[in-house]
Length: 276
Image (cartoon, rainbow, N blue to C red):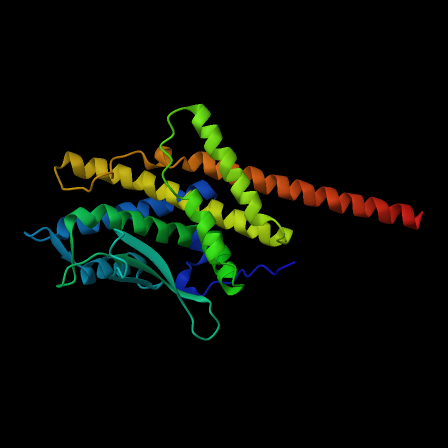
């Protein structure tokens, strides 16, 4: 069975006394930090509705007093509105920083219409800080070379639009996904199966929260007549069936654990008879 890597570098984690509490309390603390960044950035856009990346960096550094390393940079894949990623140590591969990657112009400025993207990506960052098991699992799988193209393909099948038109259609979609997940897991050790299930579930849980946050601030900005992008007012959680997919992954995880416990119980019973 693989060893769970539980240690994160100080540059990607907050002190325990700052993040202790129930999951709900920690999630709320993360949400409050997102609001803090929104209030810092909202008035900083200039008369051209632009804001330099460096100002976003300064605002984030100010929030965390540079206790963690979060790098704001130009998005290398501009076909996407934004992204958040990790920086790995060239020595041991462990995570040393997280990034927020944004589309910017030649001057290194983002447009006010990108404010929702900033908020969405920052939600991911603070979720990983306040609920460190998300990043711990991700780092463990990266270090064990488990982030394969095959797994990425499966995740892409989970993290996508479904546009279900009925409960019957939802059930069909989930049935197909369950088959695809179990096909992917076939022949893999139980511990790695659980790693994959948990990583996919955590990732979708973070997207669920980020889209909830995104819609909340899109509504705020829309009321203020600020420009927002197409789709930012949409109920992405429903359109992508995130709740249902998270529940499916949880169910498959429970089934795996139950099966493993059954095997263990049978083994102990067999040993008992041998002793007797």
